[in-house]
Image 1: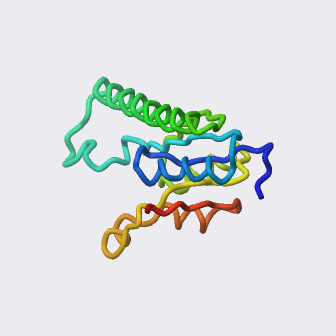
Image 2: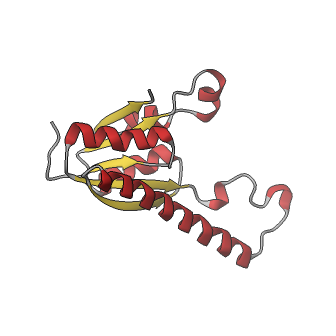
Length: 152
């Protein structure tokens, strides 16, 4: 059982498996406070920015950063809307930084989450080796309970 006074942190990226995590939290834990978290990597870490030594103008970088922030908020709002539709008391949080698993663990600490919930994409083979597993890393590095929801 989780402490009902503390929120459940749901990592959300707009994918079906992340939506499944929201659904599972609503099903298993009923109406309670949740935080729908979207993690956005810093644009400087994205490989296409300033590739091959081509400088990016400050104005362009500002536009890209603003667009990324708005996109992250729109994704979080979509997740929170889904959560509210299932009876959860949802708020949103946006974290910028990477790696993603680390930002999720940090957000759970900052919000004193009773539980971290996230979907698993079910990657295997080379994709898992190259991309890694966010859900596995969160479970390995967090001292909080982690609910990993596998797709059906």
